[in-house]
Image 1 (spheres, rainbow, N blue to C red):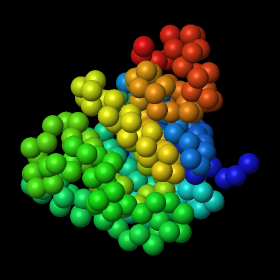
Image 2 (spheres, protein in one colour; image 1 turned 90 degrees about the vertical axis):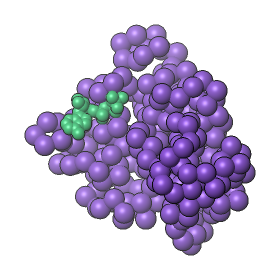
Image 3 (cartoon, rainbow, N blue to C red; image 1 turned 120 degrees about the vertical axis):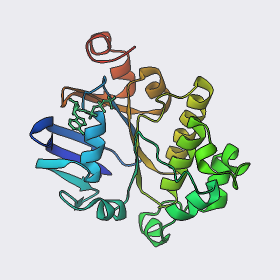
Length: 241
Ligand code: ATP
């Protein structure tokens, strides 16, 4: 089998002296949409941050393809091909939509190395039609859903090979959640590998083909989404319906 796009092995992560992850192993196959499912505080965000070099990892390893990035600064991990969309969906509020995309731009040569698509503003506006109609608008004036789209769009402008999305559906209206789901499926069809964290099992089944369940900083089960989402004992014990 080919190398996974992203692999975490035995990750022990800490906030100060408080341990949040206990030996997390996770594989994200190339071209998959993998969802990390778990309740509040289970360790989803911390797992994504560990991949991105944003928490204190005291043991374990992170690989992007065959390249080890354990302990590397986040900008180097980004250069290795990871794009990260945090839960806080930060936009540059005082800049326009288009200026936010310019800020996210990074050379396309890496994308050519990966054989992945190179993103341009025009391609982004094709993918997110609502943003196309508001190029000049200040990002701070956008709705929560529009800001989520803009954050994903800005991350794509860095031409990642793998995109990490931390709870992309959280706090958004159902119609926007559907748009985000459609966007994620489009990204996968474009050849991007996706790892997202989610509490919403329904949303997960609409976008993902693989799932891992995390509880109290440990991965409990991993496999095809249809097996995990339909397993009543897993759902009842570890997931929010
Ligand atoms: P949520 O859906 O609430 O974001 P999560 O599954 O993403 O939940 P994490 O945010 O990864 O969970 O949190 C895992 C554990 O780490 C929790 O016990 C949490 O209290 C703790 N934790 C998270 N962030 C910090 C922090 N900045 N300082 C201290 N402890 C933290």
